[in-house]
Amino acid sequence: MPIEMLREYIGKKVTIVCAGGGMGFEGTIVRIEDNWIKLEGKKHIQIVNCDAVNYINIKKES
Image (tube, rainbow, N blue to C red; front, side, top):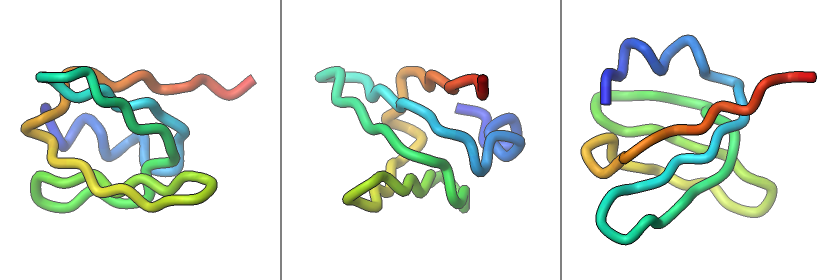
């Protein structure tokens, strides 16, 4: 996953789906550092390793 490309989406709501089990995470990207993405949801903060990411769905603002 190219981290440089993701930096423009800091502050955007996303769904991240990981390979090998299809585990999904939803939240707002608040930080990207090294090979990690920090997401903030309504009730949780999640830190996801970019090596495990299969795809990211970025929600458009309406």
